[in-house]
Structure formats: C-alpha cells, structure tokens
Image 1 (tube, one colour):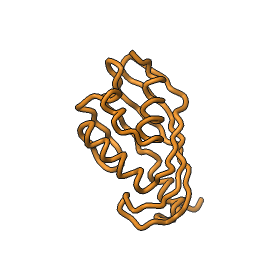
Image 2 (spheres, rainbow, N blue to C red):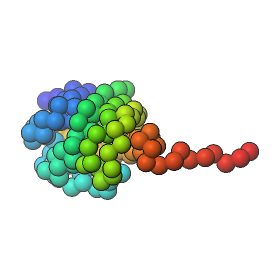
Image 3 (cartoon, rainbow, N blue to C red):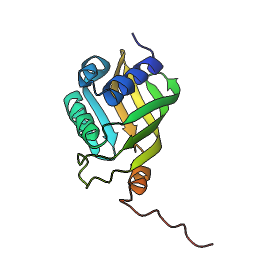
Image 4 (cartoon, rainbow, N blue to C red):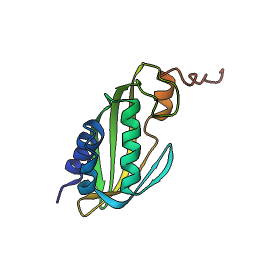
Length: 141
C-alpha cells in the first residue's frame, strides 16, 4: 500500500500532470468526493471528467505536491500549480495568459486510495492573474 506522500504524488503526477485519467481507478475510491471551488464533485468518474475539462483549458498544467503532513486518515499538503490558459474548458474566454498558484489541501486517505479532498485550488489567484477578476483593493488605513 502507498504511503500518503507517494499516493498524493502519483495522483498529481499521473492524473493531473500527465492526463492519465485511468490511473484514478487505482488511486481513488469509486465514491471519491472533491469539495472545491466548482462545488462538490461526487465520484471518481465525475472527478476524471473535471480533470479532463481542466486539462482542455490548461493543457500544460503542472502541479507539484509539497509539505505533506498526516494524522491518521487525514493528510494536509500544498500544491504549486503552473499553466497557461489556452482553452475554453473552464467556461470563460481563452486568455492565453500563464498563471502560478499555491493552494492548501486537506484529504482523507484510506487503504491506499484518496476518498475525500478539500481545497480552494488557488482559483482566486488564478482568475486575478488571468485578468478575469480585478485584484481586490485593501481598505484605506
């Protein structure tokens, strides 16, 4: 059975970075749930569809897993994500712009598989970098 670091690195390297969606069948539970900025994604097959959609918008997406900590079935980690928005798979017009984000993640891992995941996935930072949202202005002192 894979330890948390190895499992997470395989999920991000094989499924997200390489687009090998079939690897999810081994690495993720059939009833996997992803709690993210696009709402709750229920099931491994729905997660594969989300990854395919993401990769159609950002085909050069690359994620690096860092700072994995565990406590029983729970794991926390950071993900550094880079990519270039060259497709319309995310529901907004292509910008052609690169982005880089860092997101905090929490997951539940059981029997060598991911069963649940929480993250905001750096979405606000990405949308600002793509000029799709203005940078929030801090309040005046």
